[in-house]
Image (cartoon, rainbow, N blue to C red):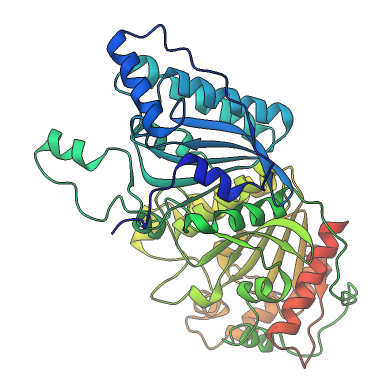
Length: 477
């Protein structure tokens, strides 16, 4: 499976940047210090590629927003990075940092230029250092991996993006399959270094056609760069602290277990901007769809959202330690981009299995809590429905905690608490009441700051809009 075409660097630039906005940052490359044969090779490469090096850098606008770019040209010695190209990249990144610009990088490279060897190889460190400084300034770094992207490029500036996508069918890997076969006398397994497989494994966020890259850049910068706008959704008057429930809390627990009840996907469907970008996986080779991560705007308020997706949590597919590692990625992303973080609690409980124990489920819960309580950006958590066990607690300790009036929080499922106290599950309802798991009790105790009232007429859409309205109100404050 391959991509439909191989885009040149100038074609990518023309496709993404607004017409007439291109400004090159590239200085002429001096090749006089290289030996004659290599000089001839460089001149031939320039004639063939129509560029003076394997990368082009500069700035422009994408749908009116300024952006810096670093784009590989594969036709120039297979997009390989020598000293001059590396210094060009690092210089562009540092200039973007000084000018406060987001960066779009589009790679297509075989890696380090073998003609220059170790001198070029170690320059990948300098590129990475410049990108770390750029990210530390709170500036977004977006990466597109074109076909092919391998070696030192993939292992440095190709793998440091806040958002990383690849072309359909692109070869993306640390070691090119031809080199692997020559070194090991066996073929590299088919499909492993395919963009689609890496997306499925949580290494990259998505596979998108290059033609769709402008829309991705527009959506990402629309969240990160554009200012917040005044919330538009109608906000319900919150429940007054001290209000008593007019029904047994067990009714709430049963209600939140209804498959038709609003979930995190409904918050995005009915309360988020259409330009939402879903991020998938830890970007470290792990993916668990029981947690959803999005770069989005909730009723006009930019944020990173990470929510427990109840529709994906089943007895056969519980929320495992990988989901919590994805959540920590979202927390770090929000902190890096200086965006508010919104967490959504809606889980029957984290995975309880030997595999989860070996995957450090308890440690991941602890690390989520520790990360969340130490964040410097605004944080809002929402107890949307079920809040069961340590998996719920991992998403809870935001600066502002919002709950729906039927939401609840308990250390175990009430049935489990009943087993511990009474030896069977028949006392679950009484245990839920005794433990004061309901949202109104949480509000009275100060563990929840705002409770959104639920109406008898609510469906998934109306409840989702009410919750998003409250979250947006808290963020706008």
